[in-house]
Length: 160
Image (tube, rainbow, N blue to C red; front, side, top):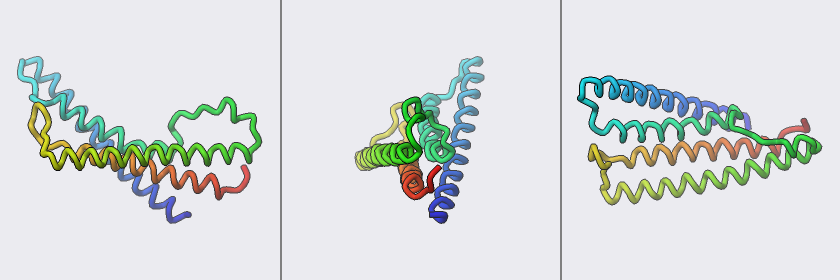
Protein backbone atom coordinates (compact mmCIF):
# COMPACT_ATOMS: atom_id res chain seq x y z
CA UNK A 1 0.00 0.00 0.00
CA UNK A 2 2.87 2.37 0.77
CA UNK A 3 4.18 1.87 -2.75
CA UNK A 4 0.80 2.85 -4.23
CA UNK A 5 0.67 5.93 -2.02
CA UNK A 6 4.15 7.00 -3.15
CA UNK A 7 3.21 6.50 -6.81
CA UNK A 8 -0.04 8.43 -6.31
CA UNK A 9 1.79 11.28 -4.59
CA UNK A 10 4.46 11.51 -7.30
CA UNK A 11 2.00 11.36 -10.20
CA UNK A 12 -0.38 13.86 -8.63
CA UNK A 13 2.51 16.20 -7.89
CA UNK A 14 3.61 16.07 -11.54
CA UNK A 15 0.02 16.64 -12.66
CA UNK A 16 -0.46 19.66 -10.40
CA UNK A 17 2.85 21.17 -11.57
CA UNK A 18 1.71 20.75 -15.20
CA UNK A 19 -1.63 22.27 -14.24
CA UNK A 20 0.22 25.18 -12.64
CA UNK A 21 2.23 25.73 -15.81
CA UNK A 22 -1.04 25.64 -17.74
CA UNK A 23 -2.65 28.29 -15.54
CA UNK A 24 0.48 30.43 -15.81
CA UNK A 25 0.34 30.25 -19.61
CA UNK A 26 -3.38 31.00 -19.44
CA UNK A 27 -2.79 34.11 -17.32
CA UNK A 28 0.03 35.36 -19.55
CA UNK A 29 -2.08 34.90 -22.68
CA UNK A 30 -5.18 36.51 -21.18
CA UNK A 31 -3.19 39.48 -19.85
CA UNK A 32 -1.32 39.95 -23.12
CA UNK A 33 -4.59 39.76 -25.04
CA UNK A 34 -6.16 42.46 -22.85
CA UNK A 35 -3.09 44.67 -23.31
CA UNK A 36 -3.15 44.12 -27.07
CA UNK A 37 -6.84 45.06 -27.20
CA UNK A 38 -5.86 48.52 -25.97
CA UNK A 39 -3.95 49.05 -29.23
CA UNK A 40 -6.70 47.33 -31.25
CA UNK A 41 -4.62 44.21 -32.06
CA UNK A 42 -6.03 41.32 -29.96
CA UNK A 43 -4.71 37.80 -30.44
CA UNK A 44 -6.80 35.68 -32.76
CA UNK A 45 -8.02 32.56 -31.01
CA UNK A 46 -7.08 33.68 -27.50
CA UNK A 47 -10.49 32.56 -26.25
CA UNK A 48 -9.94 29.06 -27.67
CA UNK A 49 -6.50 28.66 -26.15
CA UNK A 50 -7.65 30.01 -22.77
CA UNK A 51 -10.52 27.50 -22.84
CA UNK A 52 -8.21 24.59 -23.66
CA UNK A 53 -5.69 25.60 -20.98
CA UNK A 54 -8.48 26.09 -18.43
CA UNK A 55 -9.74 22.57 -19.03
CA UNK A 56 -6.23 21.15 -18.60
CA UNK A 57 -5.65 23.21 -15.45
CA UNK A 58 -8.81 21.95 -13.79
CA UNK A 59 -8.43 18.32 -14.87
CA UNK A 60 -4.78 18.10 -13.80
CA UNK A 61 -5.54 19.46 -10.33
CA UNK A 62 -8.34 17.03 -9.47
CA UNK A 63 -6.22 14.13 -8.22
CA UNK A 64 -3.95 16.35 -6.14
CA UNK A 65 -6.96 18.10 -4.61
CA UNK A 66 -8.49 14.73 -3.72
CA UNK A 67 -5.20 13.51 -2.29
CA UNK A 68 -5.08 16.60 -0.03
CA UNK A 69 -8.78 16.16 0.87
CA UNK A 70 -9.43 19.73 -0.27
CA UNK A 71 -12.76 19.02 -1.97
CA UNK A 72 -15.93 20.03 -0.16
CA UNK A 73 -17.22 17.34 2.19
CA UNK A 74 -20.63 17.56 3.81
CA UNK A 75 -20.67 15.41 6.93
CA UNK A 76 -23.47 17.00 8.93
CA UNK A 77 -25.31 13.67 9.17
CA UNK A 78 -22.38 11.30 9.47
CA UNK A 79 -20.56 13.21 12.21
CA UNK A 80 -22.87 11.64 14.81
CA UNK A 81 -22.30 8.08 13.58
CA UNK A 82 -19.87 5.67 15.24
CA UNK A 83 -16.37 5.52 13.70
CA UNK A 84 -16.98 2.12 12.14
CA UNK A 85 -20.07 3.39 10.31
CA UNK A 86 -18.18 6.51 9.18
CA UNK A 87 -15.43 4.29 7.80
CA UNK A 88 -17.92 2.17 5.85
CA UNK A 89 -19.69 5.26 4.50
CA UNK A 90 -16.34 6.75 3.45
CA UNK A 91 -15.42 3.54 1.62
CA UNK A 92 -18.78 3.43 -0.16
CA UNK A 93 -18.47 7.09 -1.11
CA UNK A 94 -14.96 6.58 -2.50
CA UNK A 95 -16.09 3.53 -4.48
CA UNK A 96 -19.10 5.27 -6.04
CA UNK A 97 -17.07 8.39 -6.84
CA UNK A 98 -14.23 6.34 -8.30
CA UNK A 99 -16.59 4.45 -10.60
CA UNK A 100 -18.29 7.68 -11.66
CA UNK A 101 -15.04 9.45 -12.57
CA UNK A 102 -13.58 6.35 -14.22
CA UNK A 103 -16.62 6.26 -16.51
CA UNK A 104 -16.19 9.98 -17.21
CA UNK A 105 -12.49 9.43 -18.04
CA UNK A 106 -13.41 6.58 -20.41
CA UNK A 107 -16.18 8.52 -22.17
CA UNK A 108 -13.94 11.57 -22.63
CA UNK A 109 -11.14 9.31 -23.93
CA UNK A 110 -13.52 7.76 -26.49
CA UNK A 111 -14.66 11.24 -27.51
CA UNK A 112 -11.00 12.23 -28.01
CA UNK A 113 -10.48 9.21 -30.25
CA UNK A 114 -13.52 10.18 -32.37
CA UNK A 115 -12.25 13.76 -32.70
CA UNK A 116 -8.75 12.53 -33.63
CA UNK A 117 -10.11 10.11 -36.24
CA UNK A 118 -12.38 12.71 -37.79
CA UNK A 119 -9.56 15.25 -38.07
CA UNK A 120 -11.74 17.94 -36.54
CA UNK A 121 -10.00 21.26 -35.89
CA UNK A 122 -10.75 24.13 -33.55
CA UNK A 123 -13.07 26.77 -34.96
CA UNK A 124 -10.91 29.89 -34.92
CA UNK A 125 -7.29 28.74 -35.04
CA UNK A 126 -7.91 25.55 -37.05
CA UNK A 127 -5.57 23.52 -34.82
CA UNK A 128 -6.00 19.97 -33.59
CA UNK A 129 -7.47 19.96 -30.12
CA UNK A 130 -7.86 16.29 -29.29
CA UNK A 131 -4.65 16.38 -27.17
CA UNK A 132 -6.50 18.67 -24.77
CA UNK A 133 -9.39 16.22 -24.67
CA UNK A 134 -6.99 13.38 -23.87
CA UNK A 135 -5.40 15.56 -21.18
CA UNK A 136 -8.78 16.01 -19.50
CA UNK A 137 -9.35 12.25 -19.70
CA UNK A 138 -5.96 11.64 -18.10
CA UNK A 139 -6.82 14.08 -15.31
CA UNK A 140 -10.06 12.24 -14.54
CA UNK A 141 -8.22 8.92 -14.80
CA UNK A 142 -5.69 9.95 -12.17
CA UNK A 143 -8.51 11.24 -9.98
CA UNK A 144 -10.04 7.75 -10.24
CA UNK A 145 -6.74 6.11 -9.30
CA UNK A 146 -6.45 8.44 -6.31
CA UNK A 147 -9.97 7.44 -5.27
CA UNK A 148 -9.05 3.73 -5.59
CA UNK A 149 -6.23 4.29 -3.11
CA UNK A 150 -8.55 6.27 -0.81
CA UNK A 151 -11.05 3.40 -1.02
CA UNK A 152 -8.39 0.84 -0.11
CA UNK A 153 -7.15 3.08 2.71
CA UNK A 154 -10.69 3.37 4.09
CA UNK A 155 -11.03 -0.42 4.08
CA UNK A 156 -7.59 -1.19 5.49
CA UNK A 157 -7.04 1.57 8.05
CA UNK A 158 -7.32 0.90 11.76
CA UNK A 159 -10.19 2.30 13.82
CA UNK A 160 -10.04 6.07 14.25
